Image (cartoon, rainbow, N blue to C red; front, top):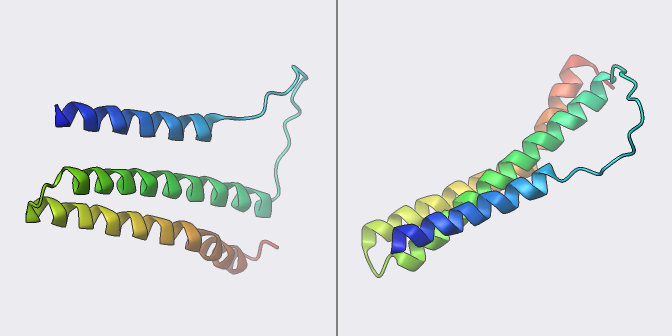
Amino acid sequence: MFRRNVYRILTITVTVLAAVAGSAPAYAAEPQILAAYPLPRIIENITAWIVGLLVGVATLFLTIGGLRRLAAGGDPTEIEKSNSAFKNALLGYALAVLAPILLAVVQGWIGAE
């Protein structure tokens, strides 16, 4: 029973994250002109993808940690596992915050301004 509920909640979480990540504006059916982007624009796009992935994974770990904490029932090993999931979520959010800074440093190294 518990395992089935966990799978349902994880499925809902992944579905919501996929829907948010996959929602792109619908454009009219105009011909697309392919053009090369300048390097700073490419780095901005990479930054956006990295931050989005990190936030999504961190949210998943936060959800798993919360579910483990709710289902622990006072079991010390389950509480420790939930604490580990919370730490991983915190690390993911911290990396998501630091990713633009780190990529700006890389951009400075390669001289793309």
